Length: 554
Picture 1 (tube, rainbow, N blue to C red):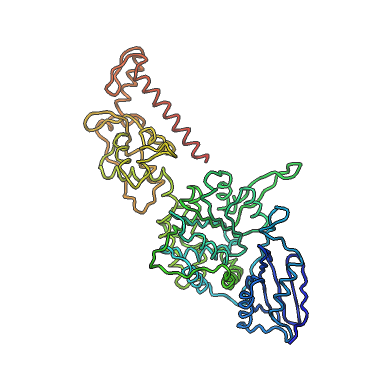
Picture 2 (cartoon, one colour; picture 1 turned 180 degrees about the vertical axis):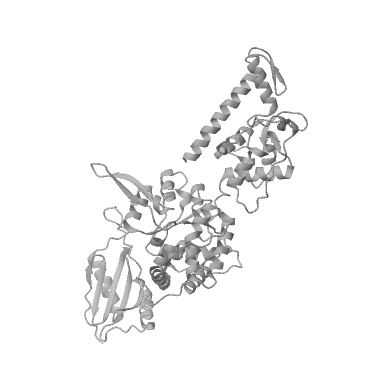
């Protein structure tokens, strides 16, 4: 049988061939090191038969694509050799001169071409779709408990992004390499809408890409470039809430102010922890290396097109339920702190609308993953508050000296305190270092009277209770009942910022400005150690206030 001539028309990045009721289209074409690739779609009488990415220069991939078409009963017109169609498409793409991405002649990179998925033709069962996504992620990844539910729900959130006012970042963290982060991003790229993968990105490229293309941004290797780029981190943070997802820049020779959107679904993978502010806006998946007995299927990147039906179903379901998702107000587990509740709210709305077992599965996943990586553990100051709470509980006291606290902290082998600092300057946490970490909470050292009569500098439990109640998760934190004040404290209850001996000393100093006074058991004269100590505490309180305001500004 002789093949009839095949002529593809090319317009706006789309190659199209029609013959009666049969249509073959190609988009997202590229030439990489001589290999021609494209996303090829076959339709019959207006109905989609098959769509997937094809390496047109590979005999095996062309045969596999044609087999999928045949299995879908998409018979092409008699007299046309199907393989000849794909060969003609390859020739036309070469003829039209798609830039070779690995050998760009001008060095200016390649254009980004993102298209919306083709909606699934039939109504989609949301619960079954989520279950199918779970099966897909489990097929290729060894994940911690409840993580697969988060992957499935976040995938649909990416499709339904227009219906949400909060967009939690999906954070994939790991202690080491080879923990499945990149594989997870590859799977996501096959099931989310308009995927834009990147292994490095600048602040300007990020907001301009989001403004122009509305992508699902999938960032890998973030530990290589994110931590020391405050502007990029700030832009990623801004994309959490729709109302604040904007950056202001000037453009053109006249420097006209313009706003650029940062509102897009984003997944970020890195070794180590996310920066604190970004972790607080994320659903964090602590990825891990598989054990030898944990067997998963190896992901074939050349077969990602087989997952295209899931992307199309996700797009259809999100379109059909957009209005309902906009109005949704799901019940959020009370154990989640405010930011975690915000992060999970759009995912819980999806689960409730999908129905079946998903409302329960989603809430269990939220509680489990919030305990594994809710961002608080990544904050050194919050970790210090937690350790101080445990220390006061274990000692059963209402006061501890700075030296006692530091001695206890540096003995904690699973904490950063034994080797505090950066680079080569790491050394055990000191008393000044302890004070510096607590200043943003409005807490500082003071002279405290110990049961043995000594008066070292230290901390009172009652001055930490407010910070404990504000920054430590409610679950796992015992009720803090400050001990009743001693008789000395009761008599001087009007003095809240100094202990009784300090107040007496200051009053005596005011009455006898040139005399000798005794402070904390030390007799000094005018201009002596007591005056220096008072000035030190005044400077310290001023520093605490300044540090607190700086923290609020951040």
